[in-house]
Amino acid sequence: MSENHITEVGGTGVPIPGDDIDTDQILPARFMKEVTFDNMADYLFYDARRDADGEFNDHPLNRFEGASIAVVNTNFGCGSSREHAPQAMMRWGVDGVVGESFAEIFADNCKSLGIPAVTASHEEVTHLQEWIEDNPDGEIEIDVEEETVTYGENVIEGEIDDAMKEALVDGIWDTTTLMYSNLSKVEETAGKLPYVTSD
Image (cartoon, rainbow, N blue to C red; front, side, top):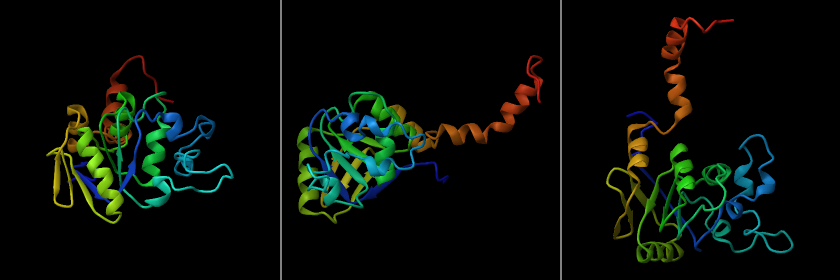
């Protein structure tokens, strides 16, 4: 199976509690002036993770370093449509997100990065967040095809948007790779067009 086919992701979890966490909290706007995404992991929840003196506080991202699955609440990723927010999460190490609900553009940006976003009920998400606090080294697995989240002895029957599920499972989420893989076809078609000249 191609490495672009994403059928499951797993690892330890990080709970990020709170409703309506917007993209400016996830990645403050002042860091968007950089021309690449290379340093975005350093800026993830930059202000929330520091105290008044700039020192790291007890924010979950500081306590659960190395986690792969973020567990969030309602309307996560609302606000501006900046791609920098999920880019920062991915570069920090997040491979999948479980939450009560996501802002539509945030979820779409996750899909474009190959990050499954699974929705579940408030009770299920809250229980998973509490479980992570009690089991910081506990493994969580997201099965994209089955739309389940497994942890401990528990299985959440979640939901993944149909378009996201199809893109991840079929390996068509990475549009840049898709374009490059079809470059010869594009060039062949362009060569047949009378109004396209090659330099």
